[in-house]
Length: 175
Image (cartoon, rainbow, N blue to C red; front, side, top):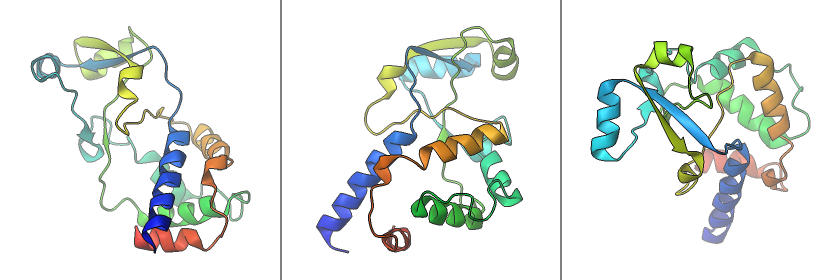
């Protein structure tokens, strides 16, 4: 693949990734333990956690499980060939080498459920401060139908923008 083609491809992928980031305005809240709060204050950093080691063992695994169970019927994703190909590859991958890192936030400043699960401190952050340096905010969706609707909505994004159906395969193999 030529350098200009690869650069253009990465720009398109970057724009596509931005379409997946959900709007998140205002203050978002991070619930944590005393040790976590101390670490954030002392370092001035908020660390991400590999999803293999989060408190909720289903976190980031629900979509993979639903994919295996048949979230979409054969040919249900008809509008976008690229989404069909990526979905097929996603289903086959089974998330073997999990390299996803997350930090969890809530839109709720005083949630008993969050207090119980994550600790004694709730820190508010302006969500706009996270929208830089290619860092994206994604809303976590747990409901099967909501996940399905989110994918169907996102498959219609104009940012997919590649015109030749076979290019997806070569990019997937190359990248």
